[in-house]
Length: 268
Image: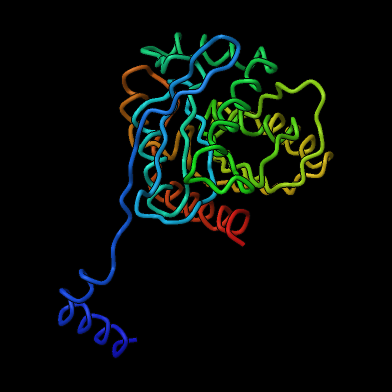
């Protein structure tokens, strides 16, 4: 181990110019990505590696109940740097963002109470993403956070054409009236101390997904609260007296597992 470390350090110290010349890092490009359905325009955020010379798998990201904010855009940038084309979708229309929990609850509830309309928005986003020249159209996954986690779990319940669905601290609210077969991978990353996710509701969601063929795995993180992947969760908890909390260890562990899952589902 010591010799290997010395060899690595020696290489890094002695050959910096060569490495810089021969290895080009990703050039992440982020831009507004508009799509329409039902007479309404939606303003998503698209991120991809402009240095890529071949199509890459697409990943939809569904935001927290706050709307399409900087947090989910940063996640899209991270995925783009790792070789995916990431579209952070706009579930509220015109890029609308909530300024208060009461407003966020209103916006998110409206979406989940009208699943046919929500599905139409998601299908419009997926169709537009598949047409982008940077996208490999036969491989696609969806990731969701909090409210977005609920949305992507329902995408799987609805049998939408995805290879994988990943939910981070998502609410297991079933919005789909008639579940359909889904043969993709489902990962549910949950904080064990999250008071906003009822264990019985989570078990019910898992049972519904498995009944129609989904390959489901729930990963629990002891001590983690709601919104454990969002570094801004502590400030929001203090500002609005919400049971949220960032957990760096759970964030890192869930992200690593998610990347391995995406690689398996989209690249192999």
